[in-house]
Length: 149
Image (cartoon, rainbow, N blue to C red; front, top):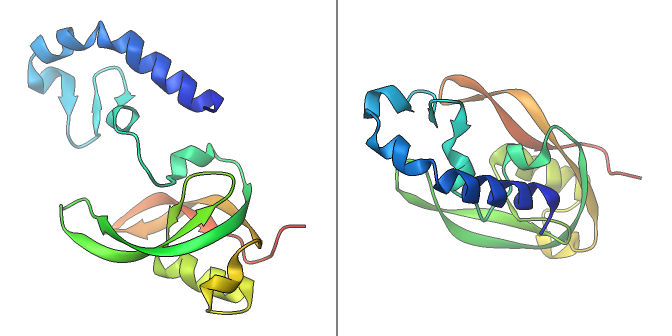
């Protein structure tokens, strides 16, 4: 378990004692759906661990990772529907669900669209702050176009 995961688990354990108070409080005073957090700025995603890499996991740093393999998996979206997507698995961290931009970058970086040949090759993940998604600007994981040293 890495330091961030340990910190999150400790926070969840500590907040378990406060959570009944949040439930008893008026829903309008403690839950802000538009912002996705309870009063006090506690992001709800802290309580919902993900099987896949999220931009928050990178903590604003570049991560050099080694491709283990690529799979095609049924992934649930925010609206509850499921869609088959490609997922790249790494040796160093959780897998990343590939969107069109990251898939195109990986194909160019690896020099082939045959994902079986990507195993053992490295790439660099980073957070791009101004990605348009659903009509809004958000942060997202991107893959650098140059291979790491």
